[in-house]
Amino acid sequence: MGSWPTLEIAKLVVGVLTPLSVALLGWLFSRQLKRLDLSNWTNQKLIEKRLVIYDEIAPKLNQLLCFFTWVGYWKTISPADAIRAKRDLDKTLNIYRHVFEAEVYQTYQDFIHLLFETYTGIGHDAKLRALVRSPDGDRRTDGGYAWIEAWDACFSEPGMAVSKQEVRARYKALMAALTRSLGVATPQAAEVTEAS
Image (cartoon, rainbow, N blue to C red; front, side):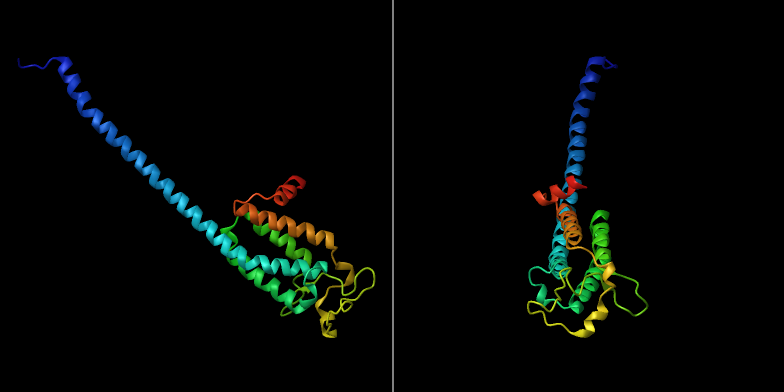
């Protein structure tokens, strides 16, 4: 009577280990769910922040597209407005560059360096790599654009001007990178990705 039979000991061990195993598995499962919830919450907050930034920069990017391609409301955008938009975009995207994937910042740099001649001297604004006159000889003043002669100094040499097709292509690439960073797949984004 002094020694327990092996079967009784095994029953006792199983009886104790089963609830402990269930409790341990429940705790591990609960921990993983909390991590998943935290990850989902963090991703949601990141997307929300990206949307706020997108709402701030998308109109300025469109402003530059219109100015450089002579479409939309380009007649209401002065060279000074375009330079100011660049400055605002640079500030925002340099502050928040790490909120986006590296692709967004790189495509932004590609776009902005296509449009502007930078590092033109200490205290000097970037110069617009656009034509004062179209290849057909039309001046920006044609069609009602109110031109100020002092704006001529805001432009790079005519040989540095970029084509409207290049501007549109880089703009589409940048907007595709931005939409991908928001988790949105658009047909235009797919076209740009396939063409790359």
